[in-house]
Image (tube, rainbow, N blue to C red; front, top):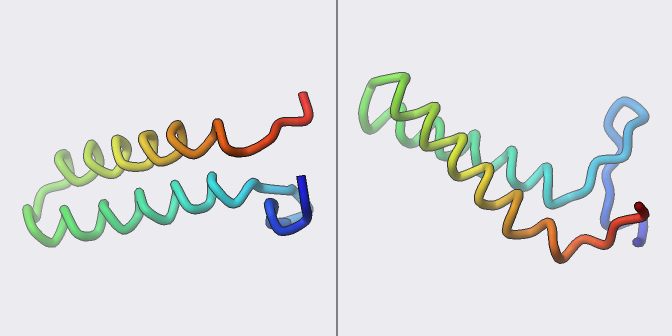
Amino acid sequence: MTARDEVSIAGVAWPVYKLLALAIGFLVLVIVAVATTSAAPSVLAAAAAGAVVWLALSPFHPSDR
């Protein structure tokens, strides 16, 4: 694992793929909220998008465990 694979936030190393999943989830949240003007589908779509990205990219990130 290289230093480029992680970002330090408040002294905690976060893998880049996790930050990408959070960013995509937030983007989906905003887009669906604007399109539907409803909280429930926005939150569900954002959670699904974030989880899919997180799980899809995690096998490509080497683990130290």
